[in-house]
View: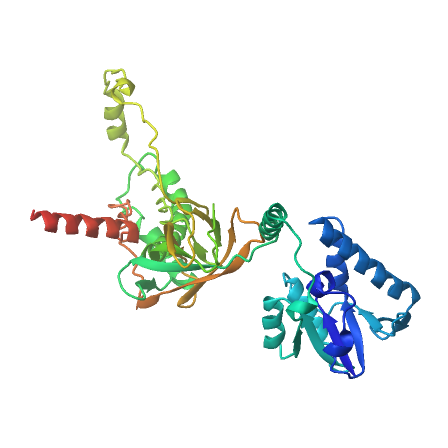
Length: 452
């Protein structure tokens, strides 16, 4: 038995009485009405042209009589009218979120294959294409089987305008790709340095070396220098603080070597422009958008013991008091600078980018630059950033992932010169972060172009 599935346009524009027997080629048939068709007819009773409202109301009353007099069957309600035409009202088949009415009707028709030979009946070219792509046979109403269009020019313009408004109100799919192009360090993929980290045993050995190295040289018998007892009591705590600083220093140097600058591009794959796009990026574990990290501060060494004679001489020195010079009037006020183009806002695991232009279809739009820092615990060569894109276009935000690939060069971390009693200060950190290296490389390139 054939199952004829007319779409909404057939019920609105087909010339009555509809010749279902011809559409079924004289075979036994049932007219199947999906729930989505009834929903659309219900809506059209109250909007659009007067002739369409009247026809929609007429068809809704016909289907309501079927619903009230029919018997419940598997998956729907079935009844036969006075002309001997059997109707079956069925629930919609499951369709992906955001599917159009045509998609739902075709999916419902395809779900009937176990009971009928489904045939989609339509006068609409888009529905014909959807049904054929789904592998379903289609019957097209001929021109003489359609009611003539009696709408005047004003009604036609109003109907076209209503269709446009309906499209704008419907959620539009937002398909935007996020591309991360590395700028610094150079290379594709950019090459970074991975420093080994000192173990707990190595840090404990550093602590012992610091405490031994800061012990004062033994003196002959005599009076103990002023403050020597306090100095000796402070050494264990200071040695532990130096070992902790060495751990933080090694982490900082590893993070300074593992910084990547990227430019972010947005590619609009939708068929319409995207206005006021906002991109939100989330950093995975052990990845930060705050680069470079703050340098660790070395602990201050305890004050060395002094001989009593030296202290007495220092107490006799009187320095004149010189008032501090007020130089605030010499600093010009800072004027805000107007910025144009992309806007970038970063926090530790989160970044927000707003391009300075609408996203045209199939066009790469520059969304800004980001510094990305990797901690020593980051393990791998591919960084995956989940993102969400919001836009002024009606529709749901789009989500996805952006990817960045890096390469590594292994290097052992070497502790700096440890403090001693004679040289208690820890040497400065000699490594530079990638941002400083980039700035120096750009300065050198500019000087080379000028011929300095």
